[in-house]
Amino acid sequence: MKYSRIPQDKLEKLEKEFVDFLVVNGITAEDWVSLKENEPINASKIVDQFSDVVWESILRSTKYLNKVEKDLAYYFFYGNKEISLIRVKKIDSDRIEKQTSTKHYNKVRELEMFEMIQNGCTVSDGEEFISLTE
Image (tube, rainbow, N blue to C red):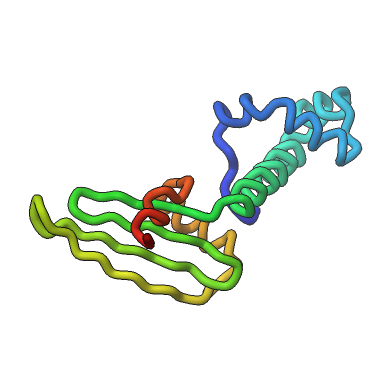
């Protein structure tokens, strides 16, 4: 498994997409019921594969991540070749300190993003990052 399994409550919301995934992979509704009952390990592997497909789709379409803490915020832009970061630190009620940096990917773009999400980043529309670059 490349990423992590999508939690059951989220999988239930993706039922239509999961059914489509099964169909594309030649698994009928009857086959799926049989797999779950008779081959739970294989059924589990199929759910893992589906989770990877969902994660890959989300990560490929995502460009911005944020991580906001008490007096510190990180705003990331994930481009094709590198990550740009704007780090904002609250100095006092009237002042902030802003630092920027860029780096090339150490791993595949989507894997780096996934690790950041696992470490507390959230997907963003990029509004904060964009406003800080203007």
